[in-house]
Image 1: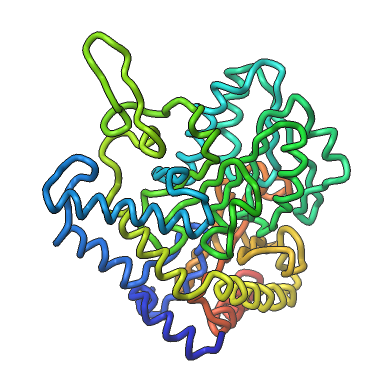
Image 2: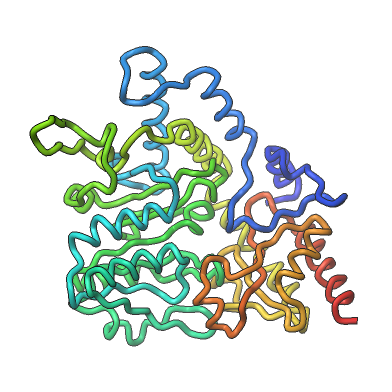
Length: 411
């Protein structure tokens, strides 16, 4: 994409015109959350001003309009990921809740003593801890797919990990630390041959690249709207219809109930409402649909190609700094728009603080992937992550600032 087009896109994001500590904001923390365009921000205000009413609960005009907008947003999400039906798209709070929903409904019903759950060493805490808890409860085993030092899943001995006792393989599509793009189709094929289901954490992929659930053939897919220019506090669980239909509810109350009496057990609503207890986050769901419209307007393939180019540029620039060490593959073709690194003499928190003084926002710490970061014999790492509105000039500012900070700390 040319600079003029990126500048036009940037003008849609009011926060990008902010100054931090007297410097123009350079926002490089997109893996944590993305900034919001005016269209999304305005849609939330417009909804509360003109349409606000609870969904599925009224026959008056406002409730009908609100319900229609809410369900239209669900249809937009379904189309974005090529779900065969909007019935298989469930609103949650975030990726973490989506994974917990699967672990403690599907997992509770299907995992037994002696079974195993397979994940990778590069998972976010949200895709480790729920499985640890269900494994502990069910006396099941957690297995990890082997990973090379450059952050790639080793497939040569995968048949020794995924076997007839494997019930679920749960893995990230793109690592939020290493940027690794995992071979999902291959792993899914192997899992299905062993009658295991597959959950894909797509928090770092759906916002950045075309993702097709039919092509990937995963059984569950999760992601968060705030990482794709939408509002916070809302996420998605996709599941294959026959699997979701057999799963028990996660929470109870509100519109997930079809029928209830004082004397008898309740009956559950149909999909997707069976998993959406209580008043849903309908205003942000509507804004999520607007975020999808904006993504489609830009084109996910365009976003992906821009991020690949800016990632390659940043990798090359970082590689010129002798005391900077990048985690994961040094081949930018193997990764998404995420680069984690550490300086051999400067603590990541000191780097982050010094960069903030120059208006540059990055992430420091273990990135909610503590076991992975510690496996590199470090306690923390710095991370930069990109989106469609980031520019090559911002990378130059970042690199120049890194050199200044290095000179200050190591003189």
